[in-house]
Image (cartoon, rainbow, N blue to C red; front, side, top):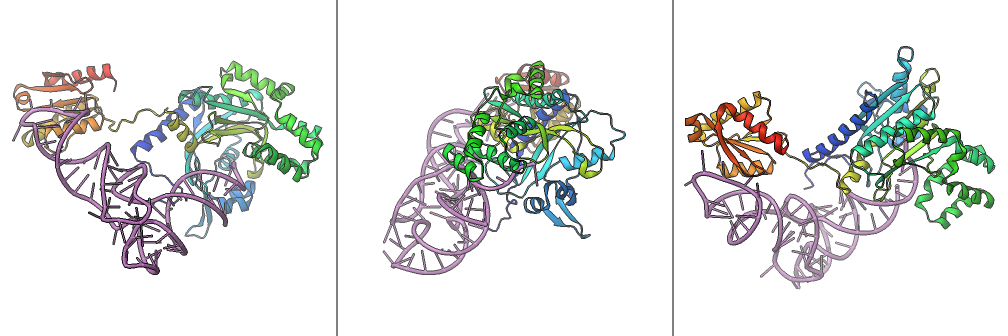
Length: 427
RNA sequence: GAGCCUGUAGCUCAACGGCAGAGCGCUACACUGUGGAUGUAGAUGUUGAGGGUUCGAAACCCUUCAGGCUCCCCA
């Protein structure tokens, strides 16, 4: 046991069943992206550490990402996020790109953190960004892309919701409470942590951090006011656009969404599963300005979001929304009657494949019973057998494995017969 | 970086100081030209590893490794 080399901590092995889930997420994410006209792109998986150090702070990068020195002595890191690479690639072609740029990506990322429910050290992330436009309507489109995905994987508005807030709105509210600028980041963290603490503990924590009793009371009023968005022109327009896009049933204003992040400047949003078995967000994003400042581009505004595969994977499994796993991608099994007919079976399989079917052929002459059991395990839908009788008469026995009916037909129409069966019971 | 919990058959778990077991899965047979169901039989273990206590350890103690959950953090 201990002799076996284990997978690296925080990584996952993708057996075919898990791979099917990952591909399901990839397909649905891609389809949601393409339906809004987004182009697929990608960046290097390895980047120089400076790319991240500039924005995120070197300490964070060194502590929470996989970094190493390559053979040439360069200090590199496995990408922990995509946005800096996006910024560089956009800046490099800023003069020739047609804006607004709409890009999406799905690929691997690495963060050196403690693995726990919903978090691994190696994960896949879907990123969607629109650059070059600064409007609430653009923000609404990004949210709509996210909702389109949630809807397409079968999550209902009762099961998943996107919570939206606006940084500028919160800033104006904090102004009204006379919360000084240098306290804003700390207050953001307070808001983020509120749901994890008891009300009494949170009150104490806020007062401890130097806010006055009246500021605390004011803060609680703000965080409990779900009509606050009506005072904000950007959010009013955002919700009108969401309505027009047909996704408003999934979206609601929530003053508790802050996303403690440095670079968000306007709209911010996070999607949650409502039952809350996973306390992490399914996806999150928002509007950012000055994206290109650190990489030498002209000022450019953007809006985007990211979704990790881990949390959504757990949610889909817990809610029973993962499609049934069919082990064999080939719905047809050609059996091998005996050793003398093995090559005949191979010929028949080849014929069926040439007609466009996906075909599995048993590779040795074992008992038919075993081959049919194998077909069953692989969830094959049709079995085709050529025994001595069929071989002598130029025929093939085609069996529908779903209802058990078998017909013996001319060899030439075997493919046609199989296709008819599949047309009825599904591929 | 800190805390709590768990490592026993391929999987899920029982045995909680006294012969290491069950269910599922697997293999074979019933069924020598046909799957799912059922029945019968069978195989499978250095109880994560190392040390200690004991007449006796899967169990108790120590060390170590691995995993899970939480705090922290979350670009």
